Length: 241
Image (cartoon, rainbow, N blue to C red):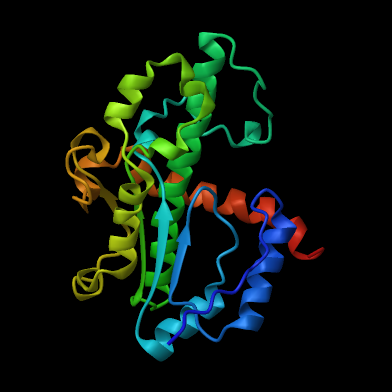
């Protein structure tokens, strides 16, 4: 049977586009078996996810995070300065402090990915949808996705510690398709790759929730605060989409 690919217009930098894409998907399809959120989180079509799990027995949500989440160092007692999240950072990376601030913003965004996955997992469990499996992962250092700021580091070192995109996708595919994820009812977990970002262990992935997740990533109160903040941030766009 020939594979049919349908194009779904989606601009992750535009919340209205995210909502529109989710609505269009519901019109196009009757089920959503696997949702992989990579690079950014859009609007999760929860209704269709729940319908799929109830009718077909299982649905999976895979959120691509990063080991960088553990590098985030709060500068205030609030852990995450939610009031300052809308503040635009420096557009130049000409000094060490600017590079450091940019890396911290990236680490904070990856922490948010993990916190979001944890809270979404708890939401589905509380609603009785235990067959909706929500997991997140560190794909390793993908050589194709390195930020421009990496230029100040020796290219040979970066190449040695990074992995090809094909190998970087393996952990994502594992969580999305491996039957053991379902048989072991793995949800709300964090998966990682082998040493040195998987350089010498391509595709060697494991459940690293207890060993690799930072203390902040396990903070349920922080996850709840992020969830509520996100709902308020998205709400104005829902009525205008």
